[in-house]
Image (cartoon, protein in one colour):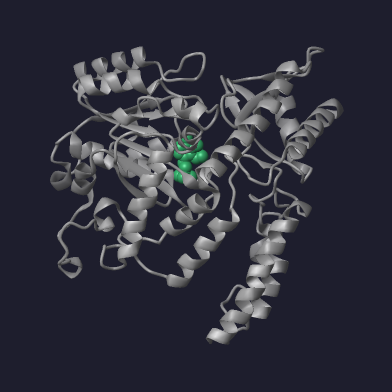
Length: 466
Ligand SMILES: Cc1ncc(COP(=O)(O)O)c(C=O)c1O
């Protein structure tokens, strides 16, 4: 592709993205594609002759777009809502243009050094006092996997050379923790029995007393506790585990403390929410996801650690072809599974600079204000009830009319399905204490008060028609 052709289509694609962002609200937020429909619309075999970009773009519009669920839609309030912000998209475009691989410092010094600078900025924004090693990974799932690999090295069991073997290792998290912890423990060879889920209190927070008991019981049974994963902002109810008390236990027991703050860590940028990271400075590692609530296009997760030596011990191998003469530099390939790494810091840098600390605080506060509208509505309603504390930007509630309904769970499942069919709003459902609930997450910069009020109107009207 000549520079001239690239320029011509590049302008068309940027215009296309700008129009998409302006018009995204006109499409149904949740794709209406039937299973297999996108695949059926595409040839089963690759093209023999090359095709021009205009034809490919036409197919993109006709065949791909109908299969898109619009995470950029202001009515997207499912899972954890996110934003592909303009500055983030522009940074991502430059990353694709440069196409560098930051595996070593010398393979693109700016990749490593911009990552160091932006992650230190983010640390400062979140109010964490001490400098820490940070690296960008694709997802929180990878970040937690890496943290637990470091925790195994910290336990000094010779696993790097001999593997887990018959050692019965144990990791702890709450019953509300994300399944990425289970996946990491299983992937690291500790088996699903290597993870013990600790019960939570009435606010869905891990109970430190039961954690301490579990560790004592496991030690007595000959198991080897190696790490605790505390969560700041659980997936279901966004509860915040008591990290200071958990840190006391980890210090006493000499085991690694990893904090999964992938969603809620970003809230600490807002001064009055800084408490969400209380005690985290005592953790050995921490994950936060700028691609969740910091307007950075997916993917961008950050793993911080006070103990990069253990991360390095888990992942470094002497490789002749990759040996490098520079001293005193960080070669990021030594801190994780992948050798190659994208220049993800660029989009984070664009976002942090474009919005600035004040702009970020203002927008996060607005999301939490909108969430409070939902919480007050649920509390004040005759027909709905709030099902979990509402501290951040995600609200958990359910339909439970005072006039009564025969099967509350079935009614909520039906309500969710009908609301999601509307095309205007997309919510998640989950179980809280075994009951079916609805979960409305605000995290998209395009979501305004009128979108939230419209969502509530739709939910109320649909519930009346049930
Ligand atoms: C608390 C928590 N941890 C981890 C994850 C996994 O995140 P990722 O998709 O970045 O792996 C999620 C996903 O929503 C989450 O809610």
